[in-house]
Length: 288
Image (cartoon, rainbow, N blue to C red; front, top):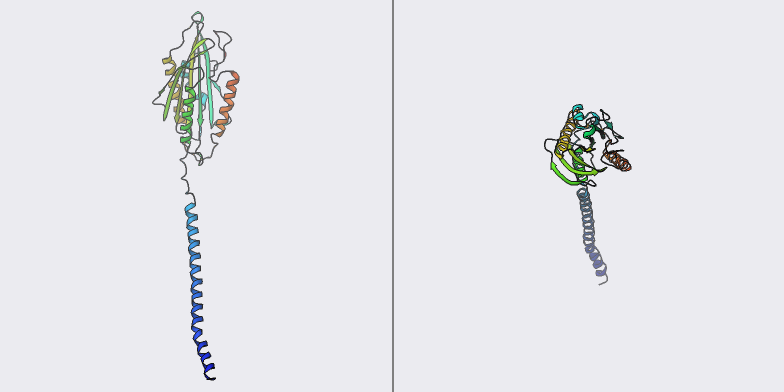
């Protein structure tokens, strides 16, 4: 009996060895499984990051025009002579601009004195605004289209305008709108016509108005509109013919143009007339 006890102990000890090996094996399998889960999580995180990244935006269309023509030569001399007889400055008066490649303007005014038959006053102005393509703001054409819409709305809402009307002006640029109305100033009735047009990334705003003084008749709305459309078509054609195409060189955005707008508006408000007409010293002789 005493010798069988040690023998039994040895048998039990040997029998326990496979159990330990099995336990070790199980422990090893468990570690391997954890590693696999970690790899899956890492892969899932990587996929999530890729999915969350914003797609690259396509490059905006380059601006069609990178320059502007001289505003004071954008309308033919003969046209200016017909629309503004006896203009004080035949070559026009250029508007101020911080960058003529972004914004330019010019105006003419004159009084055709016919003695006892009265006098005819006329005012003509043209303004260009160019918009560059910008990755964050959009293409020059899209930005110009937005400004075109704003300018049309602004003209329709002109202070004191009477019998305002709008109509499409076909054949002038990519799109154009004519706004006509009457306005009473210095106790005289003025006829106004403004043509707002867009060609590519450039907006052209042309205004023509007139009045009769000292008993002279007010010009007809049809004649004023016809003159405005003719001058606007020439100005737009000048942009198409002389402005440099393409966008090889970077140029200022229209942000400066908006600043110029504010300066010009303040200047106009100070003069008391944002349409370019100053109150005459007498009924027969308007000032420039």
